[in-house]
Length: 504
Image (cartoon, rainbow, N blue to C red; front, side):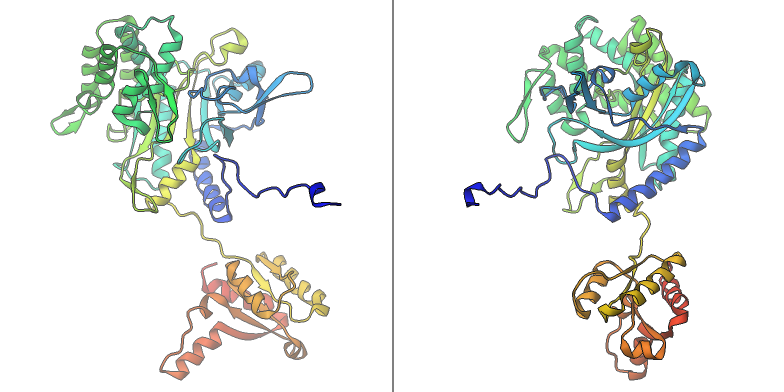
């Protein structure tokens, strides 16, 4: 076969917008998820899982970014020519599940779910095409009490994860407030395309700030890479009205007697919006929600109104909320970053109705797992559980593999993580391997130890700290602790002694 006939070697490369996850990150994530699960269970939510793939028409077309031909989702056609898509969130599949099983479910239906979702969007720093969400939803409850409960759930989740009061805030708004605002700006209810463009532009406020949002509300915006995003096409007067309302600090952070007051802000909101029926409905719902959380003991430093909260997804119909971490966060390069929302959600009363034709009220929240873990780690609030590597049984004599395997099995039977070195390298390389695995100790048995019925236990953690000192006796004592003989019959007890030394 000639060189021309040979197939080119594939390049080992990760697709854009995706990431590999190593063991420490996986363990930290699992530990955080276990904490979140406990809080969600405490609120009475039950677990549910749905497939990663749904029929495309079941998912609908609700994504906030439409810079891809298939509108933000990864899709493919099945052999029966029906279109399937990877789920872009956990809410649309829930709506399909509820509609399909409506008669057999308790109402209200309360569920939580954790799993990966996929977005066919332009990747960027902190924006991935695959990421994990942890959702809690209540379906069949029309009262704002259900929305209030989710705001309290978000606050309790963050505090249970170690975020103290004052270092987070759950911000609440209502899509009907925004409807009233757009009505004041001269955008009719029937102009769905422009309204959605406006909402999606405002939803980028955390990332783009006032100037970026104003550009998107107008002709459009060119990002750092040179790509241009077409704007909503509003007139300057309309942009001033919308930005003046949403980003006015006096309305967002009303202070009275030195303390933030939700009720005072609602009074100011009522005056700003006027007397349209949709605005009155929004204010009534906001007032009811904030009164409920206040009566449950949650102050405005935990849960508060914020006019800039929009949520870009089209299906939200009432209260919307998001939680963010408020301390300055410095990344590994020493730069201060804005993390954005780590929990978000809202009411979506029309999503199940798409399938059933009947109104089914629903509300939910979603935890951005990767973003929250990233923020917790940078704040030093959450490092996950440190896990020692496995005990490694070294191989001196390849003809005695059965003896070494027996030792490994004895350790495993005692519930100790252990492995047999399966490479082909010598002793020096085997020790280096154990170091790289984070092993607390290695088990050594050469011919001499075998004749004496012994093993040598070498404590790699303690050994790494043994350095020559002036006091020879002290030095030899430390050396003896770092490596010591034990009867082969006492192998498990000897290894446990080392593990206990290091808190395992």
